[in-house]
Length: 168
Figure 1 (spheres, rainbow, N blue to C red):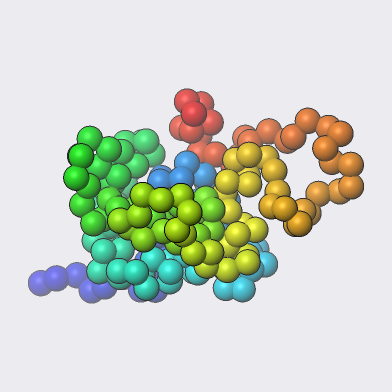
Figure 2 (spheres, one colour):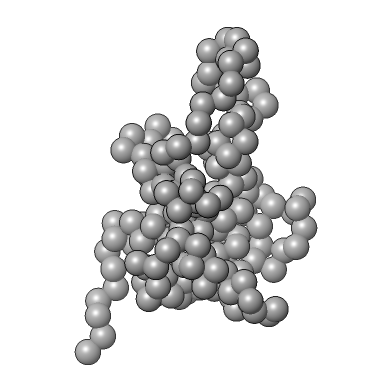
């Protein structure tokens, strides 16, 4: 007897946990208690990935389920098939999901170009993890107070996963 498909909430939670392992960012950063974007980025990103291959996303989530509990870097290396010169469709989907979280753009799973992505929404662009990692903000948008550049940027502790903060 096969198990029933996960509920939408459970699937979204799995996607956030998977994304945390792939991006190196804590789940609370990817899925904050209060997300002012509409829809929340995690929902937008899962829907975007599903539009480009829901069966592949489901296969990626199933592969993640088999390795969760391992260190995040081990999970990422396994799912990204870093030692495989011809990665599977699920590994290519994982790569596209990483790009989506970091730059807010969808890159086709077979893309090797840095310029052929499609920005999925203004909120995705503004909410890209690249800005957090760079301790910067997108051009034309900042929640920081005037003169913020006069002080050193805040630490990234609490943003990156414990494993990444200690070894990254």
